[in-house]
Image (cartoon, rainbow, N blue to C red; front, side, top):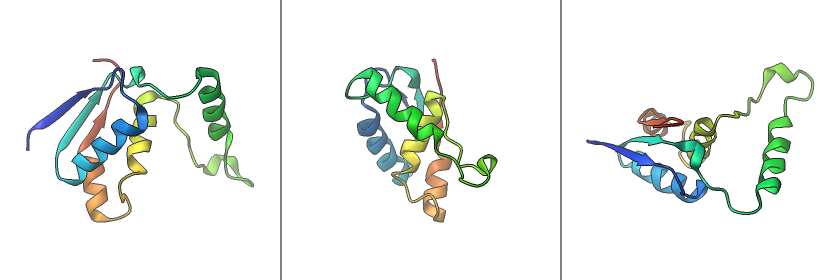
Length: 105
């Protein structure tokens, strides 16, 4: 199949991720660019604080064991899409392999 290039500027994170996840599961190759321009609903400060609380969550007895929470916008989109795909199955792993995310053009 052809590669679909998506300009993420102005799109809502969850809505974009659900559409992309469905396309990936149907076998479509997807490239997402300009992920730093993705919108989040709600106030900026509230969303920022919420994500900072999420990033602080680590393994209780040995923090270097993870889980690792990414800061880059492309990785945030990738992880959101991963949550919508059955990534622990063969079909889901292949679907995630068809996804590429980038900041900038």
